[in-house]
Image (tube, rainbow, N blue to C red; front, side, top):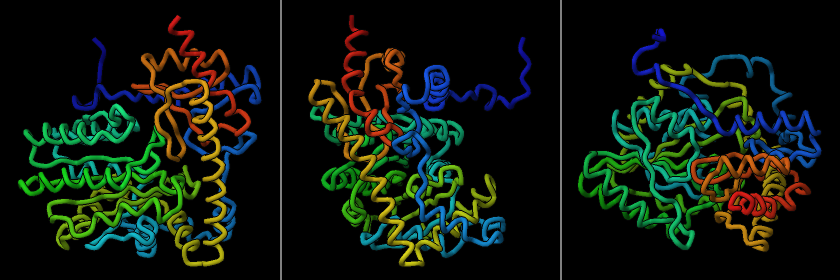
Length: 414
């Protein structure tokens, strides 16, 4: 018998990360065949046209100019006050909803999702998200003692499946008194899809229906890729809809510096809460501060200070936003090349609106990913299909990828 020293609830924990597995296979092929021969569509970081990691120049300049004391000193557990104010402004831009708003610094967007699940999903209860989802949602739910369940994201017309969402909410709330739903929009990972304002009207109608029955309803909006979804106020217009909701409805946002500031490894983000109730936001501040102390204590002060410095310097902010828009246009162009060529050759790809990723449905995603390896194309096999990281594929290499996807599908079908 194999000996285990782990607690019974921990002994079976094993992490299978398809993203890093696919990336490792890509690195091996690059060593064998040469980097220029390989198409790396695996990893969620921005790469330039020669495959090197991209960094926003203003971010680097400001970061390197900061005094060492701003980088190495402890930050308050909840975060630097100026940072907490700044992330609220950045989250909403000109579309800040009416109500009470609070924020707490977290270890990246992942930390924000962790706190939301840890503090707003009952142990043993279901958390709801779409069937196309970032796999770490499931890992977090399991770690926090809840269970992830899904609804089909797309209807027959490849629009948001509000009927499927509503049916799943109804089924869950037959057995639960509260529900946490995670909605990743705009620029959804892994599809690049975004909910419309009408979609949000429908989601909130479902939310209010059950709130009126006394259920506690929480929606976590994962906005990790919002800065690569389009013009900042246009992409945030839906946030106005969160004004003056019932006091048993809580809206949360997971803010991340990883993508928007190219600060992936600095692990800095925030959880933002919006409620019509002052008491709910006071509770939000208290319980999430407690969770922070119990997990990472406090987070990266340097990255928080960097964000504040950029926000408070108009010239730096204007230059920073121009640089980030250039990055957005670069990724958008790559994604649109794939989608245009997919349409031309008849490849069925999911609707892409913007962001780092797009996806192709597949009956056997691993087999399709393996078949693509023959053309030295490396993408990530998921449960329902294969994810392509438009952020990491140089423009020149993106040409022809859709056609090779179709060829790989045809080869598998015999």
